[in-house]
Length: 100
Image 1: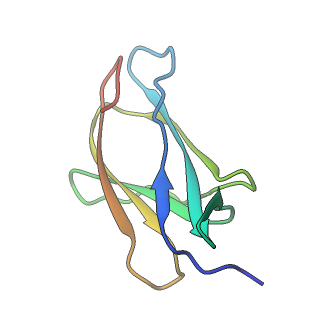
Image 2: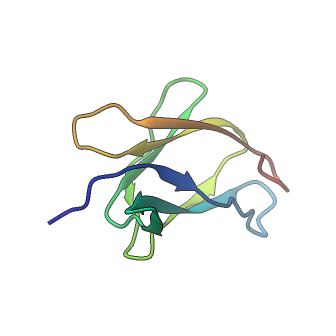
């Protein structure tokens, strides 16, 4: 039985050593009974500035997700808590060296 989400925390973004592309990664946590536990099996997508959505990745059992070879630009990271429901959006900026 899946536990309902009480809240989701978004973790870190780390650049790769590539000059023109980056790896976006993070960890999803959910709050259950006042405890934060990993949120595995959650769909995550990136929406670029032209409203083109990336393929979906799933967070693993530890709540980690990864997007590789992400071009520099402004994106909206979308966390899909419920299938068919609206995503939780997080704006991010990917540059050649850093992500904010």
